[in-house]
Image 1 (tube, one colour):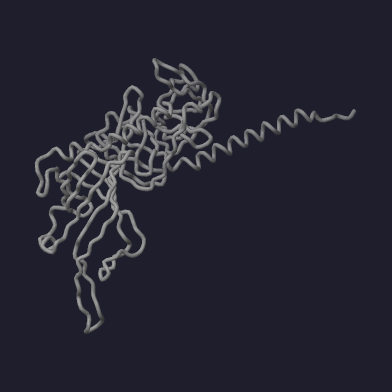
Image 2: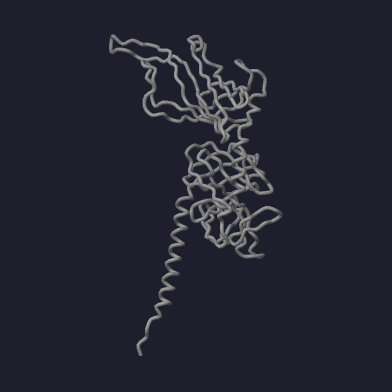
Amino acid sequence: MKIRPNWLLVFSLLTALNSSALSQENVADVVKRSTDAVVLIVISDSSGTETTLGSGFLASADGEIVTNYHVIKDAHSAIVKLSNGAFFPVNGVLASDSDKDLAIVKVNGKNLPFLSLGELEKVQVGEHVVAIGSPLGLEGTVSDGIVSAIRDVSGEKWIQTTAPASHGNSGGPLLDMSNNVVGVITLGVNPDLGQNLNFAVPCNEVTAMLISARQKSQPLDSVGSNAAGAVSEGKLWTSLTNGRDYNLRQDGDYLYVDWIDMPPELKSAGGFIRAELTKSSDGTWKGVQHARLPCTYTRGYGAYAQTVTNSCSRSSGIEIHFVSGTRIEGSTTVPEKFNCSKCEPEGKDQQKPFTWIPK
């Protein structure tokens, strides 16, 4: 008796195997594209003792990090660790909401990897999702599952997922297969009460909070509310980068910056550095810095060499991307080289970061 293969059954098995392999490949692709933007957050108390570990993810290239409110609520200080081993101290909290269990903290960084936010309206029940975090401090832990449901609890929406989450996953991203953050892992139900019951704050809540944080991230009333400075009314700030003191004064959507402790010899030579910035719709302050400073070079060679000093004027870009009552961070555009004989920049422009603190 000749046995004929059931080609329909064979085809079904091959299809299932191919789907499983494709699914696993997609998960690996999502992880590869996302893991660099997922961070471990280490919380410490006032004595410097580590108290809590949590997860988070970068939502912008300049250091905005999304996490859970319960991760940072009792923090005296915090350190963020990236997957490449880099550490950043948390400078402050841009926004938080205990009811939604969301917080946005800020570190001082530039050109950092970050994740894009999805849209809740496009999230479908049964959709494949991936969770990345640091359960029990085990960095870069990956789990996957599906969106089990989208729950409405007292007017607040929550994403229910089967992607396993443990203590320390809190604040990590829940990603769709297009690499978009669809939620922020916030809690899991005790396995004794129910299996694969984990919940995430929807991405639209994160988007709204980020927009609000960027609009409120420049409390410049505190900059301009103190007593008079040496040049004009405003608060004095000192640079951690070069030690200079600056006077800041706000007038509506305009911010004026003046270097006030210039050495007498530069001031007598007509030197100055001043900047005018305008508030942008994204919450940053952008403008132009004008400078007039002596610039010395050597003309001629050997016995005929002479030292010549030109008074050079130049303008460059300046941006302030983070402001709080105790810290200002930004960057200025500087040339690779400066030709003092021609008073002209040479080479490529570079971004030079700065940090100011109250004097």
